[in-house]
Length: 287
Image (cartoon, rainbow, N blue to C red):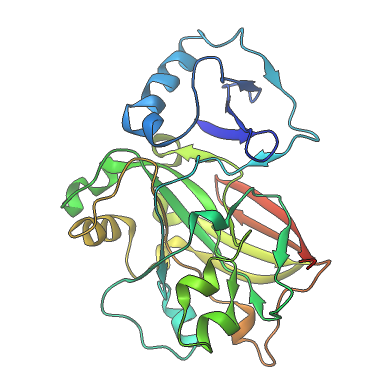
């Protein structure tokens, strides 16, 4: 099942794709894809209603010309994993970590999948990072590896946009460098775990202006998703609707010689197998 949120910023409605591919507006039966939806088994209920045909009379949604919002409504936490591909660690000159490197992005950084990425007027070293992310479906506290995937509600694309000057050269401020407004595009949709199947065989790619910058596959993750859920939930309770982004493959701009960064007017396209694509324009902040 594919879940979207569509409409103007701050007024998105929930939608879902029927088996025939038609998108429908489910706002009359689901308030939003938020913590309560995931925590109360909303995805299971919605899937059953959809398969039974009880939603067929709901209004259709034409996505042409319709803005897509982030498909998870205001997650309580957006946790990211750094250096989770060996070849990405190598290109940055970093040691392969012995345990997951975790940081958070501010939820105010979250953006729609095709919304503009707005570069701040006082920085000029913004980089790209395509990532597989997942949303927690049920509360996870001290979860074992064997049961970890039971707590995953679905998968989505995360663009971990990163301002390298702020992240690396101003005291190692990963949180700040990763949390500028618009620096967390999510979507275009969440695909529920049952439809994705094995999340460790997915291709990832990122193009800038049609030029391939990143190519990877989740089979080369250093710490796979069960490990991440077990590791994080050992000490941090994961709540329904929390989003975890699993790291980026090689090809980031900061590792190029010379480095290359996003510029106003660029178009960035991200793809992950089964999870659709993001396509965003880059703009410059106006003071």
